[in-house]
Length: 239
Image (cartoon, rainbow, N blue to C red; front, side, top):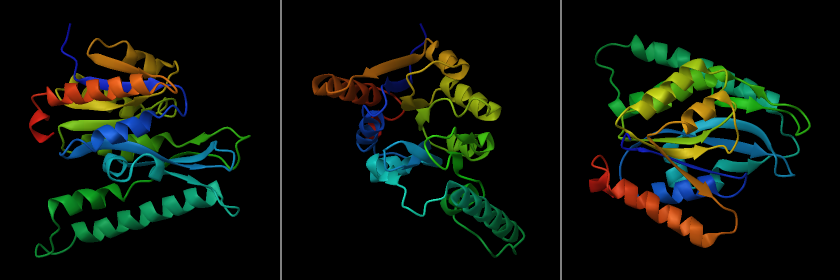
């Protein structure tokens, strides 16, 4: 059997998968690549809008900070339009940067961050919870791929699910990462579709099933994941 270096947490909705992942990431003192999903919820707690964020936000802010509740004046369509306009403005700004004199320079880190701003972030949205989600698969194929390709030995995927089904380039990037020697850690939805089934069928994957209201089991999973990371030749020295 191939040595596993891919670790995914699964479980029912609301069980605390991303919260556990965030706690784990806070124990890792190294640069992270990958993504986390931020959401805007309706008053009933069901999601209205999802957007991609850098995985570092999950580590620095925690899972709860990536969730917000829509106000009375919330409009998903307006948020999407503003997201598109911001991406277009940053594309034009970066074109100016790229054409600037050689004396104009940015640090490598700043340049990487600026490049991410040129992409749309919102990948699924709806005006109310009775509607089906409108999915923008190109957000995964553009921003999602860029986040996965950032230089780091550990890549966070929070979470893998159904919205990526039409994002072919993103799926290829995920499988390329799973094939690599990099550590991949994250959350995967507890459901079946061709994308998720192919991931779950791999022999280089360790899957952890998080149970609701079982604090002892939660602690065991946390400790086991931390132990696996400590034993990794790639990141153990940074923990």
